[in-house]
Image 1 (cartoon, rainbow, N blue to C red):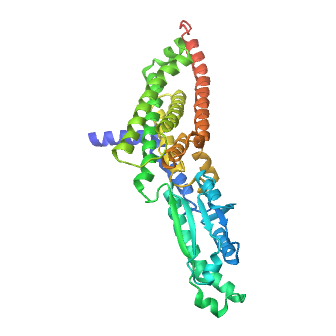
Image 2 (cartoon, rainbow, N blue to C red):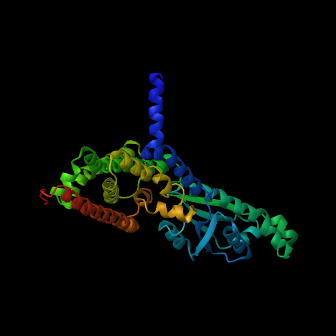
Image 3 (cartoon, rainbow, N blue to C red):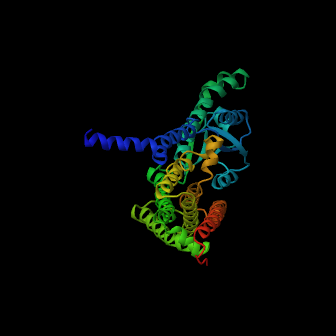
Length: 391
């Protein structure tokens, strides 16, 4: 047998007999493809939350309202009395679209005067804004050119005179937060958060695993308290992660001139809690697995799909319930929501209070699990080496 054949067969056998390598090569791709298939199973964005303002209260305005609610792209979830009230709901994230029907719409259409309907759209997510603009334009044109005219003619309201005076409804829209539909403004924050998360995840996840491979971990946990180990393991990565976060966003905002509207100090607070959550989850992972390869595998399994599952591009509400639950269990989801609220929308900390609480909870839970594992591993290490002095 040639040297090539011998080496090839050795590696081929390792590919199938080593469980960790076999899972990475064969199981992980299938898992990802299945997850991504379910993620986009709805095929397009639907049921966009919409607030309606009907200042006309006419047959035509009611027909428009019904048409929007019947279209699968929109879901009328709130009725507002004024445009200001509707705008508040959009700014607070309670609705993604506001349909503003002005007073006198039907009268203007009948008499041939200018008639228009305004659609205000949250443009912080380009998939939503693009879908909303197209669908709203289609619905208004359909109502304007066909359904409403036929219905009114059939009831004898307009008649032949109505045909000559009919001019239709003009579609007007206003996109908030990203009116130019810039992909730089939309995508780069999410990608930056994903990269910074992955670097921090892997760095922390390998810290304990490396000691396990070197054979020093048992001595470390036998002679040091959990809080001392945790502080020494996490603090360097938290400082590095904070520096990377500050440097990265400074480069994006100042170097590339991406517009932003909120406080950088508020962003750094969210970033600090995000880094803490990522670091503690990576730290917990390193306790669970025996070597760097397994820790890397699990860290990558979490980090790679995080961006797609975060709701930053594809809305969480358009995902199947199980996939949405996975997305809501990832720290990147809450960090990117905070980035969008602060930098893109210009909101303060009150708008990201829930994100901060969830990130803090993730950190506390990860540390608690790591502490339980530490206690188990420490007792095991002391049994093997009873002369160790625990601090």
